Image (cartoon, rainbow, N blue to C red; front, side, top):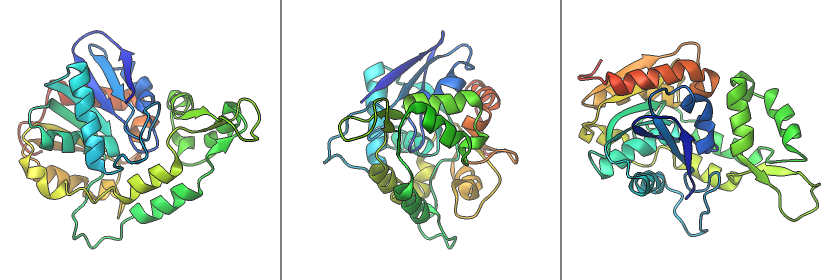
Amino acid sequence: MALHDLGGDGPPVLLAHATGFAGGIWEPIATRLAGYHCFALDARCHGQTVTPAAASRSWHGVADDVLAAVDALGLHGCPAAGHSMGSAALLLAELKRPGTFRALYCYEPVTAPVDTAEPMRDEVLAELTLRRRDRFDSLDAARANFAAQAPFDTFHPASLEAYLQHCFVPVTGGSEPPGAVTLACPKVDESELDRLGRRHGLYERLDAIAVPVTVAAGPREPGSPSSFAAGVVQRLARARLIRHEDLGHFGPQQDPERIAAEIVAAWTDPPQVRA
């Protein structure tokens, strides 16, 4: 598993990324987390991590990656922040090993009731992922493509650049031209992770988590993580909800300065009760 030292001075913290991204996507936020030494992991199937074909693609496996990063870096009792899959993985890790974290910031954790009547988007997202273009003749070609394509066209420039620099790898072999790149997370793996996104049983076990959690989300969108954010907060013992009506599921990439300030507040002034 690849671990990244994103710099900074102060107590160590851990940052966990969303599906399809990598630890380096946090760079624009890490540079704004004054007073902290930031570390990030590349979860299985992502970034520079080498994943055996037989390794589980379940989100419990991603939680094990989080715990492995904590152990390798000696981060027991540290604050942490996550986005989407990364948020769910932090919560699952805390369930597996209570006290792993001191305080959590979770932007749109992917979890929902198993019996929800809302039509979920996970299967649709999984199919769209399989159809996504994943190879480009150059990084510049990838940049031009994503800069004009939702949701990447809403990214802060530094976030888009972090995505390009850390979520692509050179193409090896084949007939592609020199300099060709492909997504670091194979789309078949990302699709499988999308399909398993609400099948980890986290939602029904949230009341067992004692660590303070700040949950942030964009406007409520049926079938998406933002729709269940309020329910997540209601089930946690110590939690608060922050709504961003002007941001979407990729809020951390849209406004890294605002999210960084929120993360610091979540760690320095964690919720004592549900709010």
